[in-house]
Image (cartoon, rainbow, N blue to C red):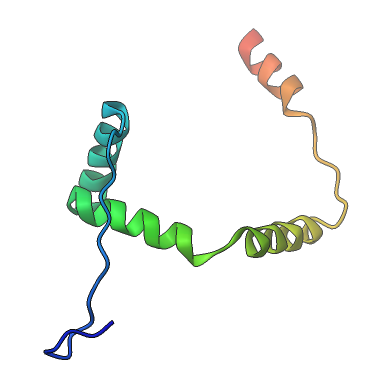
Length: 85
């Protein structure tokens, strides 16, 4: 939509009843990125809206194929060895 002055009208949303721990984590993340809580939430929403589930699955399949059937060690054994040191 376009306003009468030619500027685009930006949509707004209100999110109610967020758990306080979620808000604190978002605030911390915003501080890390040097932006406001609102800017951080906006960035998260914009990023999550860029790719739909079908695109994400397609990307995951491409990455999986990139490993070309290679076998990887079971990290459980490596973790256990490290703990036993």
